[in-house]
Image 1 (cartoon, one colour):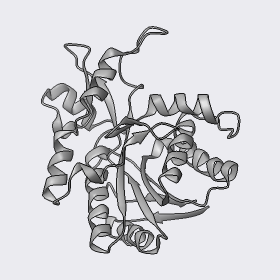
Image 2 (image 1 turned 90 degrees about the horizontal axis):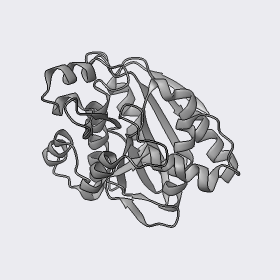
Image 3 (image 1 turned 30 degrees about the vertical axis):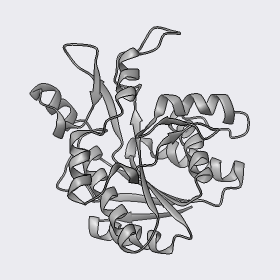
Length: 253
C-alpha cells in the first residue's frame, strides 16, 4: 500500500488523471457519497445534500456536519470532471454512488422493513444538484454504474445501498474474507462486483472517519481473492469548502 498527502485540488487531480491515463482497462469512480436523513415533519427520507435542502434548520445541520457537509456535491463535481476527462482521453470511465442509508434515519423495528427507505430506492432519482452537474458537462445517467447483486441482477440503477452491501457480505463473503468494521464489510461485495464488471482501476472519495475501515476492506479483499484491481482511496473532511482539498490522504492499494 502506497500513501500520499496532497495539499491542493490541483495536486490531487494530477495524481488521479495519471491513474486514469495509466489504467489498463476500465475505470470506476466512487463519488457523491451521501447519507439519508428523515424529514422533521414526516418519516420520509431524503439525501443529506445541503445544497438541495430548503428547510433552513436542517440545511445548516447538514452543512456543518463533519461527515456530510460539502462532501457529497464537491466530490460529485470532481468525479464528474474525471469522467469527462476519461471520455476526452478515450478511456472507459464510470461513476458510482454509495448511500449511507442506515446511520441517520429512523430504524425500523426488528424484522420489519423501513418502507420510507424502500420508497427512496424505488423512486431512484438523482439529487437535483447531481442532475445539474451532469447536464452542465454534457453527460447522462448512462455513466452511472448500477448496483447489481452477486449474480448480476440489477438491485438499483443509480445507488449502492450500504445496508444491502452489508447483507451481501454476511450472506456470501463473511467466511472467506475476515474484516471487522461495518464499512469494511460494505467494501468487500462492492469491490467484488466491480471486478466482475471488469473494472481495472477504482478511485474512491471517502469521509476521513471511514479511513481505517475502508482500507481494511480494500486490503483484505485483494488478499482474500487475489484481486488484481488497483484501488485508490481518497480520504477527505467535509466541513470547510475553502480548504476542502487540503491535507487529503491518498492510499493506493
